[in-house]
Length: 369
Image (tube, rainbow, N blue to C red; front, side):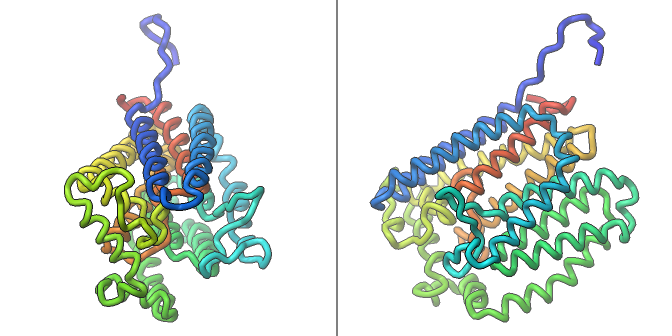
């Protein structure tokens, strides 16, 4: 575009609010992972591995922030096919190791890769391309059928692992992106109505899943069983009071709170930093999501808008589910807390998503610093 003033145009800077909140959350994550594993024989091992993931994630985020987001439109079909194949591979004996009754990972070069993390990002890219290409015709139910079929196939594969938390995220992503993309409300509500009884059947057909829901409503009655994680998490928050007990002073992490460095890392932070610390983390997440959605809202191009909203939604949904579980208002889902929990696949995909959103924001004409 020509510059009417004749002055050289300055390159638009990245969204500093989004960058600052991302790195603060990652830094807090490293701190809490070290604290949560401090009594373990391999505490430094956890920290070093996560530091490697952070370094790789930072390089990935910066690289994708400089790559024009329009390229993902052409790659979206290939990415959704590859990620679907990887998810299916976890179900093949020998490829997907069974950990705690689930086959959600693939072993590669000494690391465990969780393909569903990449699937979430690929699905957003595919749906953004799918919806933006069809324009007003997206209001026709027949046009939506390929998207519905894809979501059903993905849900079947994920249920086989099983991973019901990710299945909920996949369904939520599809609903949000189709609705934001202009689909008629009845066309996105009817699939939810149809899916509800199926979900109820899946839950009630398994004693393990039924116990988890029962623990949600009365966790203290089952604190030595299915309610153990939730009750210990709630106790951790309670012990933290307003300002916390101090770094590394958590008592519940001492083999009383399972998955303290992954799913329940916020509970450890709550005990050590108190209500002030938890509130600060939620403010950082709120800032991150605000800037992500703002990039999507201000994008002049439908694909960019849908892509930013979809990627931000994935992060936001996972935050809500994880925080809800640790506070005892949702049943355990096995989902990590974005940017803070230990785990490479989740961290890399989240930082990659933020990199794409940074590029969308940078190229938007009205996103303010």
